[in-house]
Length: 400
Figure (cartoon, rainbow, N blue to C red):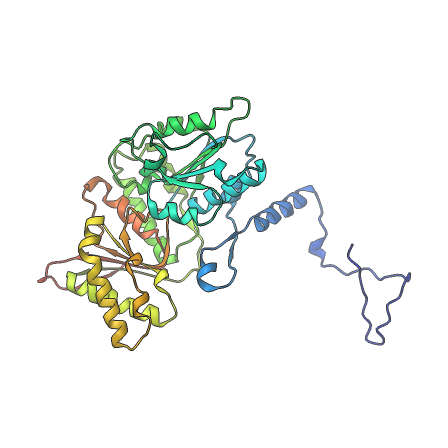
C-alpha cells in the first residue's frame, strides 16, 4: 500500500492517526464513463507492450518503441483463439519485431521451452539475428525441409519474410501446418508474416492463394524509417498501383491506400549515377564522415544487387574505407570488415541506420521495383542509392 506523507514547511513531524488532506489530482484523472476507462486501459496496454529498440545495444542505453495501433491489435489477439494467422505488412511496418514479440508471448502463454518454438526464414543473416535473442529455435527454410531435421518437439511455428520462400525443396507450408496441427485437441500456433511488395524472385513461393490466406491482419504504418526514406517508399509503392506485376495478388494492392508513416524523424535519401570508381570513393568518404561522428561499422550496410557483385566489388570498397581511415590517423581501420557488405536479398528482414545500395538492378525486370523497395526499407536514417554509369556520363545527384 502506498503511504501518503504530507510534508509541511513548518515541521517534518509525521502525524499518526491524524486526518490526511485529500490529494488534489488534475481534473483529467477523473474518468467520467466506461468509454474513458476502456480508452485508458488500451493506452496502458500499448505502453506496457513497448518493445526494446535494436538501437539499445548500439547506443549502450535502453530505448523503447511504442506499438502502433495496428501492432497492438495483432499482439493483443488471443493465441488460444487465433492459432493460425497471416500478417501482411508493407515495407518498414515492423513485421520482424512483431514476430519476435509473438514468440515471447507464445512462450509466456503456453509456458513452453525455447526448442518448442520454431522460427523459419529464408536467409542466414536474419536466422542468426533471431537465434541470438534466445527466444526460439531459428532455421532457414532449406534446413527446415531436410529429411533429417528433427520436428518431434516443435509445437509452434513462426514464418517470416514468407514471400521469399521457394518450393524447390518441397511444400514447406503443408509441412509447417502438419506439425502445428499434429495435436488435434490443442493445435499449435502457425503465424506467417509476409510482404508481396518485397518479393525477390519469380519462382513459386509455396504460399496458399491470397484468398485462402485467412484469418488475415495488415500492418500499413511505417515505423522505422526517416521521413525522406518513407516518402521514397511511398513513391515506389505507387508504381505498383500503376503497373502491378503478376507476382502481386490484386488483393494486396488495397494496402497501398492505407500507407502512412510516423512523421518527424530526420534523415537522408539520395540517388546518384556515378562510375564504379567514383562510387567506391563516395562510399569511403561518407563512411569516414559517419564513423568520425560516432557511428560504428555495425550501423552501416553496403548492399549489392547479387551475391556475385558483392564478391566482385566488396574488397574494393573495404580497402578504400580502411585506407581513408588510416590516412586520417584513425586507429579503428581494422574494425571495418566484410560484415558491412551483403546482397539486398540476403539482408531482407534486417536493418541499419545507414545503407548504401550499389546498383540495385534486378536481373529479372518484373521485380526491379521489389528489389528497390527491399533496399530502401533496410535503412533507418540515411539511404544512398548509387547506380553505375559509364565513364563518359556526367555524375548526377537526385533527391529521393
